View 1 (cartoon, rainbow, N blue to C red):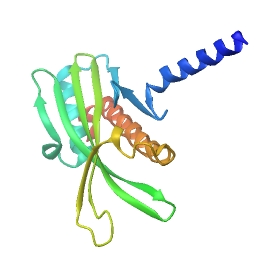
View 2: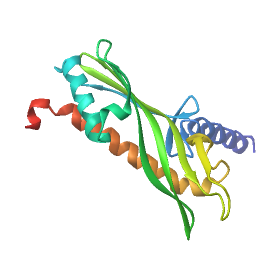
View 3: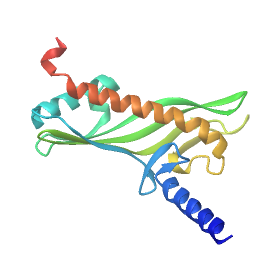
Length: 183
């Protein structure tokens, strides 16, 4: 009986520890916030070349670098941008809500490596909460959105995760492409 109880406690504690790393086991968490981060080595690529590639990636990804980039520090090798994508959240089988999901993208550059961090996810949308109701402005952190409705979120979060993986893959691909190769 003691062995079964010990096994149960061990499994429970390990599940709690691992559950803290991901939101509902789907979206990566860091300090309680959804965060995608990684350091990518690019041997033989200077910080200046990587900076130019990142700037071009922002422009190509968001169709405008000026509207997205919040901090542009070439000297220290850091670019911070705020981007948005639209996705549909299915409330029920017959209703859906289109949401804008904003995020902050921070890229730091050194010779031979790049560090990205995508965080501060916010759902932002203007919507009508009910027929004959006034317009409401939804602006809430992703971690707080729809709390307690885990079944719905387990269907919604994979869409966000897929979009972030595609975004990260596009960044990695852009970093491998020399700017002169674009011609």
